Image: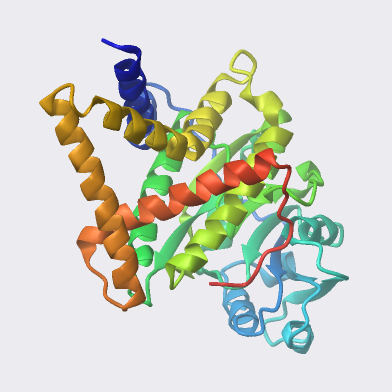
Length: 386
């Protein structure tokens, strides 16, 4: 076997591992390693719901009403809205609910300028009175039992952070929306297996919580829902996934929104991994390093592997029928993605194009993100899309 063939099959193996091999591995490990969380339904610490907001006048009122309806003692619950330099009516709407019939303490914490989500959270945590802080987005609506489902895990002193679960709704009916739902179904499954073994490494950005005593201020250019849990892991605590803590959110309506969002998230995630690179040491943090390398870094490198696969396969087409078929399948796959792109622009959505189209969106965004990180680019602020 030539070196070109070895490279082709090695990269194919890496892509398979990133999307299929790793989920199978953690599923297998979860059958043999079980680390149960000592939950207590009676545990009722003080809780702060911290909502990060930038120009959220469209959703903030509904979010506040949704939060008032959460099942938790109102004298042990408060809402802090961290407004990151909002220029619309967000702040005005929040002030109107300072005196509310639910009897919940509502605090507007204004962050001057446009500092970004992580900076806004860093600042707002200082005014939070809760022992447990739940981080949320303004567009994310919570199931009524979210708070109780989350805090019962903190009865276990080994737990430092808890992630809830996304349930995406595809109201727009778009191709990207359906593929996003499939992607997050897989992500939620993987998190459930990781928790069963020991710990997860990253949380769902619109629904995760931490012990305030463990919160660590982070650089503004890194993604908090990945790195904050990693800092807690370094302190010797575990991060658990709570599937009964449900957050509902609409998928992006168009591929361009998903593409831009992916670049923002991946660039911030890559910078976050660089910040927490000590956790990549498999000798000191074996299970954590396995997750970060397999589930983050390998996923981000998939577009590089795909380019190598395409080029090496093109070089081997004349060598055998197998390589001709493999190259033909790649051509068909990318043609389906291209067709899906043009059909979306016409408002036509066919299931056969969902996954190829979404695969190319995510991996093109990852490839661009790699170049941005190598160039030293950082992304701090976020834009309201969903």
